Image 1: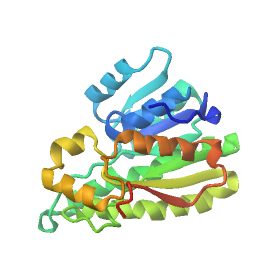
Image 2: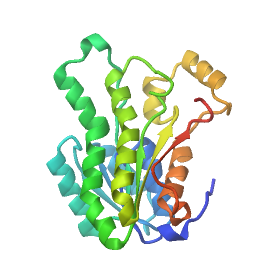
Image 3: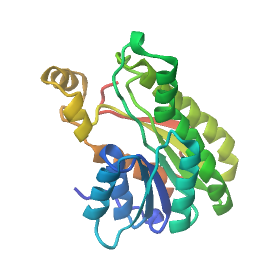
Length: 252
């Protein structure tokens, strides 16, 4: 289904973390369809190459293979996107993993690794692109959070902690970068039916509970998030910053 066209996104340089599959893949596709120059970072080479091969030949998309837990590698990847497409004025902090884990199984090392996967890189990605945005006279950062901490979901305390912190990070960055016309918002998805979610976590019982709790009685898909990301990245949302916007079909 064709969504809105945002002229302000054409020829902008966009960086998407975790762009090789799932919600990130949809975000990359949506920005490419707007005529943006899209760089994306992912650890999964196979999925990322499949995405590149499936895009129209005229799309301007660049892939950097990077483990975002390594901040030095992240900074090099950001530099690679900048070298390919020029100054980055839109950042989508999407990369995350919602692996389940019990309280008694969490070690200090696992805790640190989960924070690195789900939170730490969001700050350092923003830090890396902020100078581009300031020099350009403005920009937009969209952080992807989760409604999981709002609904009190269990069996993954490290993930829940990290995702709740995205809201605080968003508000902190919005306040500090606002004087330079850099807008920072976060989007809190509900249960989005990516291939990973359907393969690993979706059960008939879980789907029945979801349909009972959501106001909208349909499964949500990655494009439901990607289209909202476009709005918060485009000039159409030019007065919107410091916000945490829920996209969950009315679950919360």
